[in-house]
Image 1: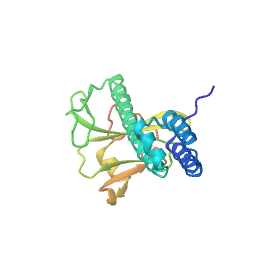
Image 2 (image 1 turned 180 degrees about the vertical axis):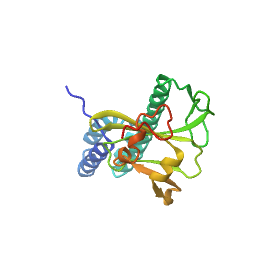
Image 3 (image 1 turned 90 degrees about the vertical axis):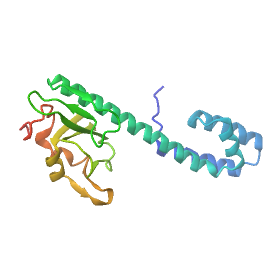
Image 4 (image 1 turned 135 degrees about the vertical axis):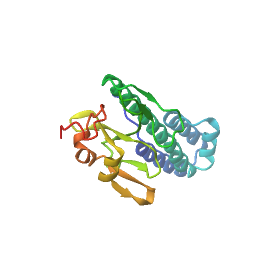
Length: 210
């Protein structure tokens, strides 16, 4: 049987359908059976949550939205960790000694030590191309020397990585003053940083492959 990807939007739709059923059904036993099977199986709520839903079906949508928020945060964290590991691996394969920065550093994730040059601070951002509203962003105050942008599931390639000096990414990006920073969209970064794709040697003018 094919596994169905249960997205936050699908969970919310199921929640609304279930809320409608619970509001319109008078039989408490049927309510409990349906709620127990549906919510426990699909959303993983505990018995206390189930009891609350039986008493107040309208609260289910809020609970699902809160649950989805936690799922979204977890997915983003996993995507970020995977992106950092991938960039770190590619630096190493390119002969550039690199290591993860200690947690809590102001704006960078990886430290690269190019032969004969000072250590370089690299900020890593990972985003999914399939979500058109996604964007890569950083704060004005972030301290990094190069930005590494990992684009997942882009057309024709599973993963693309662009690495450019801070001055370049600041100059070519959009000024997002309301976020106190700058940004690229997942749709325009391949044009904005074309010559910096796979720039694991940290060449200031890029790889020249644009």
